[in-house]
Each structure stands twice: as structure tokens, then as C-alpha cells.
Amino acid sequence: METTKIAQSGLTQTNEFIDNNRIKIEEFMLNMPSQVHNPQHYNTGSIEAILYLEDNMPLDAFIGYLEGSVKKYLHRWRYKNNPVQDLEKAMWYNARLVWKLKGNMLKDYLDD
Image (cartoon, rainbow, N blue to C red; front, side, top):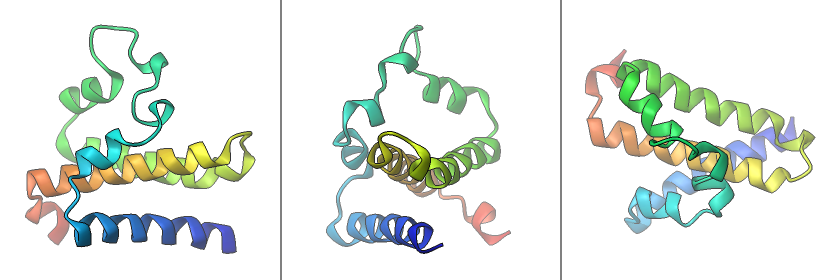
């Protein structure tokens, strides 16, 4: 579908923008609206959900979770009342995935 190509193109452009402009991915994620990068309902315990998952999952499982989240938000944005927010969430999870891959230097993972 054309809309899916547009959304995927947006993620590619986001990654290129981050790389070409040397913007820290953490800053990119934090500059997203608060409902995207830090939703209140994910912070009700003593640790944010994403940090708990990262701490308690093997690396390849956490990377799969991030990739799946990107795909989930790209799939469902057109069916939501606030489609832009879901596209922003897809961008956030994609940025987190890039950050994780760069930070962990997953040469073996990427060579598979």
C-alpha cells in the first residue's frame, strides 16, 4: 500500500537525518511528544516498562521486541484516532532500535 511505503520512507529518512546530522538518538527520542517517549501509564511502578523489558530479556529478544513495536505502530496508525502519534511511536521505537544496535555493536547479530 502507498501509505505503508510513505511511513517506511519516513523511518528511513529519520535514520538518515540522525546519521547525517550527528544528532544523538537519545535526544531525538526525548524530543518526541511526552505521550510518545514517556507515557504516564508506563511509569506507574518503580521502573519504566521499556527499561524493565531491556533488563529482563536476552539482547536478541529485546531487539525483536523493538522491531515488532515498529511494525505494530506502522500497521495500525491508519486505524487510530490520532494516527500521527502512532507514527511518532514507530519512529521512537525505530530510533531506540538503532541506538541499541549502535550501542551494543551487534556485528554477529547483523551478520546472520
